[in-house]
Amino acid sequence: MLRRTALIVEDDDATRGLFRLALIFEGFQVFEATDGLEALRLIEQDPPDIIILDLGLPILSGHDVAKEVTASAHTRRIPILVVTGSDADLDSLHVDCVLRKPVDLDRLVRAVHRCRAAG
Image (cartoon, rainbow, N blue to C red):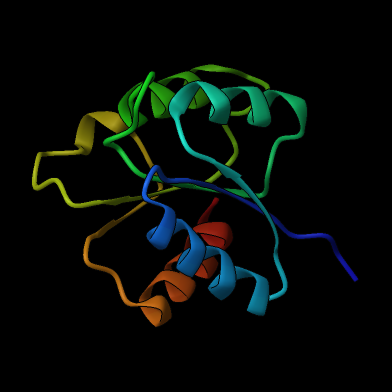
């Protein structure tokens, strides 16, 4: 079976846990980061098939993570699904998909599959 990996970058433990369970149920191997700096380290070590990214992160924001990932030739092809409670304009991020919180898990799973197919 093809290995499918997802990196969830979310500082809220409960949200991250729900996302993790939904993606494991879908057959993903899931990695997690609680801040932007940890996320960039994990992405550099072993680039995932998709990144599920919160924008309001400690240490390094989700905006900065998205910019770093899309600017690097090594990682720019990784689809990014931003999941945020912010109502700010996100067009400048150049990400593949956006979901606004609160997010039900069915919508999350559909968005992950859609973003991977588009990426």
